[in-house]
Image 1 (tube, one colour):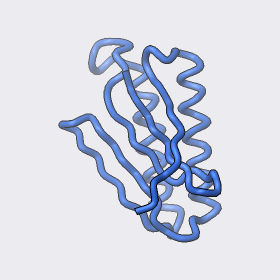
Image 2 (cartoon, one colour; image 1 turned 90 degrees about the vertical axis):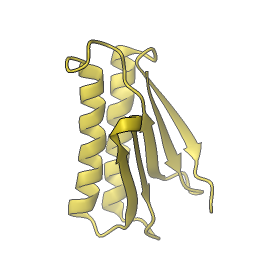
Image 3 (cartoon, one colour; image 1 turned 60 degrees about the vertical axis):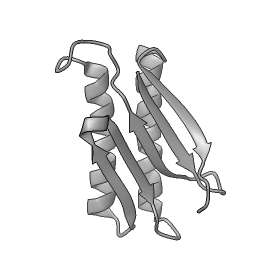
Length: 113
């Protein structure tokens, strides 16, 4: 199962996420749920990098099947906010189509450090 935790700031705005695991919908290389989630996640990271001036921490740990991403710009741009909202919309659509057996999404308040 893919587990996605999407973080919100104190204003309820999405500001980052952590994704881990594999869907297990089909054999490795043929798993359309994993592919769809991966495309959404990587495209969101690349789009925020390319189309905004927001600063972020992002990491892909292939050996651990973990992707993490956090906007560190204050305030976050409207473009980054839109892109993260779009990510959550897409992830929810995949979960609604294929079920929580393959992808589970949790929304969590980001802990201030």
